Image (cartoon, rainbow, N blue to C red; front, top):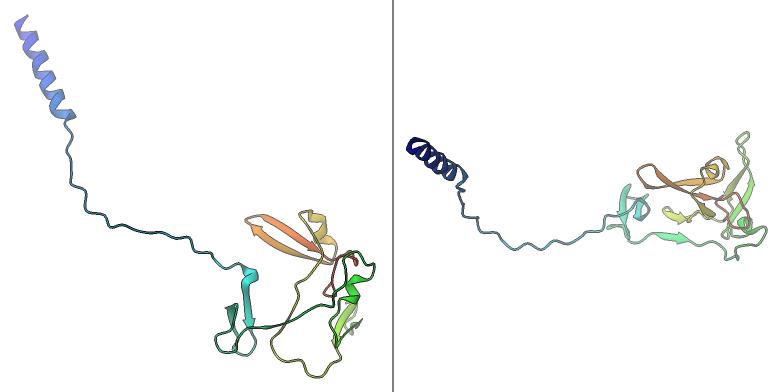
Length: 160
């Protein structure tokens, strides 16, 4: 019986040695402050025709862009899309076969770098809008899309 008691004591001592844990000094950690940075969206990025560079808000060399505003017409007007056309422009038949209508400049020279828009219409997730011939697809994430459908003339602007 004394031999088995001695074996048990040896096993217990071995088990105690195996379960011993070692501790390490943690290196000193410096305090860090994290802040979220808003990434610009594709719609925030503009292009300078003079520099041929992209920018956000304002071109470093040429300043902020010039946006041409649509004529103000309430949504719901049956011919809203044509009536929103800015002054100096005309909607007429395109010279390109089967292209439908186009927009023509009747004003004097337009300065380089003018921005028109945004494209207006009914915002939908319905994929049928993609087939209307008047829609823009907006990527909202991986395999997630919305459409700005300009088919309805009472909700769209001249850019349709």
